[in-house]
Amino acid sequence: MPFDPYRLARPLLFKLQPETAHALAFTAGKLIQPLPGMTPLISAICGKPSPSLARTVCGLTFTSPIGLAAGLDKGAELLDMWKALGLGFVEIGTVTPKPQPGNPRPRLFRLPEECLILNRMGFNSEGARIVAKRLRNRPRGLMVGGNIGKNKATPEEMALDDYREAYRIIAPWVDFTILNISSPNTPGLRRLQAPEMLRPLLDGMLSTRREMSLERQPLFVKLAPDIPFEELDAIVDVVVSCGISGIVATNTTLDRGIVSEVNRAKVETWGEGGLSGRGLKLKAREIQRRILKRLPRTVAFMACGGIGSAEDARIALDDGAALVQIYSALIFEGPLLIGRMNRGLAAEKGTR
Ligand SMILES: Cc1cc2nc3c(=O)[nH]c(=O)nc-3n(C[C@H](O)[C@H](O)[C@H](O)COP(=O)(O)O)c2cc1C
Image 1: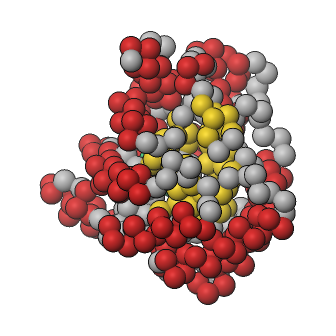
Image 2: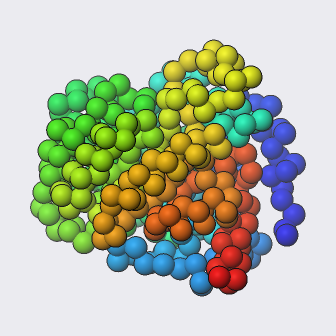
């Protein structure tokens, strides 16, 4: 097992405000990434994903089923680094059509003893044009998904216009696109999940995809974990009947019940926001299983929410997910987690 510098850095990073720690880690990544020979060195230390992990989903070839969930690399700034660390794909974004600052700080909190994060970032985004420009230099061999959303100032009834605008700018530079209609931090966004709102949104996006001759590019929709089962079934039916390529589930939860009782009062003092991390795992898994039961195998599924080990990933894949995504676990375990998950999955595969 390689020496893990994150073990040394973590106590220091966790003394800082979460957003400051994030900015520091990102700055370090951006400084290291372009140094000659650095990404090959990182790749050699972390190990490339075993060829046995490669898979084709929606016609795209992924070197590993493990990918980065949206929100960590919103602006597609560290793609070479993610590839070197062994990820099969990265979901960039959420990218909004126009730049916007997001919610006021503090807007990011962590509970290390439960590997839990609360965020109300509110789609801080440089805007689609800047991100698309950066994507022109993206590395080969790493699948990139563009997660898009609407600007805060755009009224719900105009949401389709925003998704279209962001799509037109981002889609030509990515391998697949994800419509984020499940962030709890943009007022009204989750209402777009209601079947009567969802159908026109998806139909509209599919027609934009056709207009751009991008029919072969997969289009996903990302759902929340806080949807009652009956409504979830109706949403899945809309997704299937519209002809969308797949579903990503789940986003963060508003359910404070996933926090242990001893820490719940503390989390309440942090205020509004979505929770992610270890405590989300079982809740997300229930939603994922409900979706997968209803989803025809022709529609792809990406599992997200509390996944933090090869075993978690294996369970999701065995349940029928084509790919899995991680976010919070990376904050608590550090980037070498990716290699450990790849090796763990490959080893299990070998013994099957
Ligand atoms: C700080 C933070 C920012 C996030 N930003 C986004 C975002 O912009 N778009 C999105 O679709 N999901 C976003 N997410 C949700 C993650 O993509 C993921 O769905 C969620 O965290 C559950 O996965 P996890 O338990 O592995 O973290 C964010 C999560 C965190 C912790």
